[in-house]
Length: 403
Ligand SMILES: *Cc1c(COP(=O)(O)O)cnc(C)c1O
Image 1: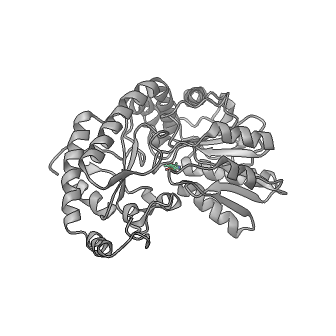
Image 2: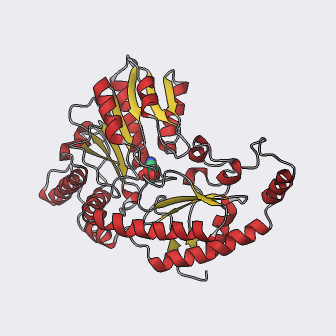
């Protein structure tokens, strides 16, 4: 590789923060006790878990007893959704959106095969939900609404305050997949009446394999994993002490970084984006530029393949993605961009660049320089472009295929 790593894929995963590694190391080495054991040696592990629970709760504006540690964001999502349905057996309707992460989307699709009615709300061209559509979809049979807080592919932020107020007024439980939001946006659950919230450690500089589910006090809950008494019987399995300590530390760090990063990372993203749009013709931003995560941009380049761009960026050791990691290798354009109605000639040429805590201006300028050349080279050999030019030659635009 010709250059040191430029990591612009922070929505896929993040580097473990050095402070986080430092905090968890003792629990991988000498403090290996099982928190459930009676002797005082295990007491250190027990206290470490308690401290981490407080740190996570503090970032969310929650109380420690409302935090359940899980193995990942995916487990938190599944736990919340199946819990709400199991706790209300007479209600068989689930409402979600077409732009969820697969960890929610696939559960919705699975529930349909189990006799539930599932409503997948659509979005407009900027990825925005219509709150009136949600209101119309609510019924006496609705067990749960699950809406992503901030989209992993476009960074779009949903108006959770309005959604939560509506669900509360109608007495319907609300879950949000906040995996991309926590650590990047200030979230205060003391003032935001959601019932369940999922987060994941590896999206905020803790290691992979640790997540948490917030369950508001008094909300119906049924465990997803049964067995021991851990997490007050709400999630069995011996506590992953080192990872839990890491998540706690990562949340404490995020609380301290959130304001500064919202300014600095946003400025980096805006620099990246404005240079791309300024220097590369026929490039557009997918999503809603006004209301997005500070580090995320999803850019579409007309006539070329996002996958080809990513392969060429990789030759310069630049990491980006074409959306959800779960769909890469699949030539269908992302389900999120399809739901937004992004035209075919743009959707295929879309890439996501997600910046974070450790990125620099130098990296942004390096990536822009390479991207300009890559797009130029790919367009020179693009078959789409040739066929679009042919169509355009005798086309009045009414066919819809030339836009
Ligand atoms: C990454 C991600 C998940 C899954 O989290 P894991 O910890 O990897 O299981 C769920 N939802 C969103 C929005 C994500 O970005």
